[in-house]
Image (cartoon, rainbow, N blue to C red):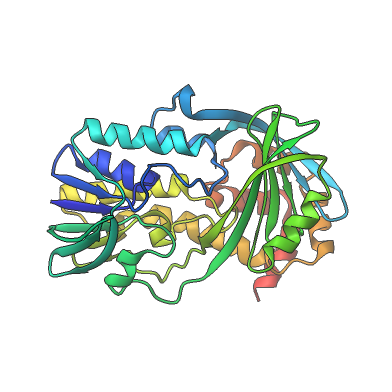
Length: 357
């Protein structure tokens, strides 16, 4: 018996992969899968390496990314492979349906309380139940109760994301915008020609940066807000202990560059399913994933030390035709493939590396 806590993408994907081989129970504290939505749904084309995409949960495909510096200097990248905007509610539901079709059992409105000696405590609306399990998987988000119960939740850092769905004027449906100098960064992600997700991510004061950002857009009407904390990847975080495992946000498997983690969570789920089925070591199978996350953390540590002028200098550097071509052709989920090529094409990037010293 395998118990998975959390019915987000990593939990549902893992349930789908494992339910072919074992009895799988998924426990989700909310009453409906896919809600509340606390994500832009933005992924690179690398998601196609993990599952088949269906039009029913794709809101938009992005061909261009424009990065805007604090001075308003900007550069636009024409992507070789379009980015994809997922409808997170429909996407999560789709993954759950696949798992259910494979035999996984879903338990909604069921909150994980604790774990001890192969038994988990689950609180439903009316009572707290105790259930036996052979393996326990925490796919229960950045404040993972599974991690806490197993003694795996130590010294974690977080950033805060604040976002709104807004009806805007003059939306370029093919263009994603990133704004530098607003906390870690800010974004405008178009869902369609009428609605975009506008948001910021910051270590502190996200509301202040968000209000500044709203002044930059031609606002029509705010449909709704959402916010949440995002874990910062830490290579020292342990992702398994005995028969307890962590995936996705619960394991802080999130890109520190853009604070996205959907593809990383799917990758971790595939690694864990292989480890369980073939009796391999989960942590060892995450070696390649961790390598990319470490490179992303390295980049974020540099960017967090940028002055406003540094952002302008960065935009100037990537105007180079060869440098721009490298960025356009490599998915940002694989920074290790990009960094060396960028350094060779434009040695002046080394001046930013000095910020790590």
